[in-house]
View 1: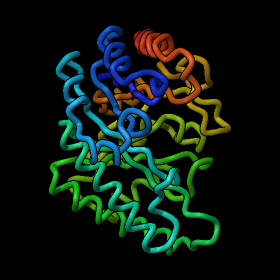
View 2: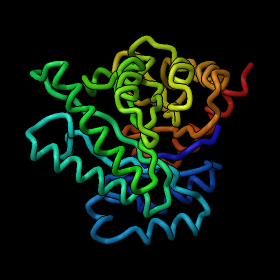
View 3: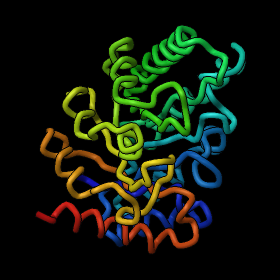
Length: 274
């Protein structure tokens, strides 16, 4: 597998720190978090992406995936009125533009919580309408959209392999694919490797993280309950050996460099265990 560093945990440092650490620790690529203060979409649309492209060149570390911050802060295309939906769509279309400008092939996004009063039919209709619009726009920009399921603690839209499979069947577009964040199958009682088996060529990305099994927590690999080495080897046996971002988020802001180093070291050691 090729391992990526997620920049969210570096938000109390300049973005260059993440690139420097990725090079220093042996990460293969960057997954760029699209939030303040580093790479918020509206800022990049206004001020440009030259500084990000300069970091890519300086450290010879590519940004292979852009992950804009969305889902209720302040954008969530799964809830609100038509005007709010349209603004959320335009925001994500701007994010697709940014993805293309920085030379990333993939943009990762998810489907937020639709609230407690929408029917299953209305949730499905809104989701499909959104995916069709974004996929069509991504095709124009030669960007592949990676649709990420969320845990049941975060959303009620796409929270399982079945949900993801249904969405990718309803919107069968060459610029739309799926992925697995290991916290999702672990909390829903699914084998992570089944994502690879059932999605086939539509499976294009992986988030590695540990989890406690009863929350949406993203825990340092080795500190939670997932048998990570065995699970990752099953994923590889199922046929996926591609991009895998280690998704450390806000729980590790206090020492992002130390935890980025520990996470990669632990994952490599776990996958070598027999």
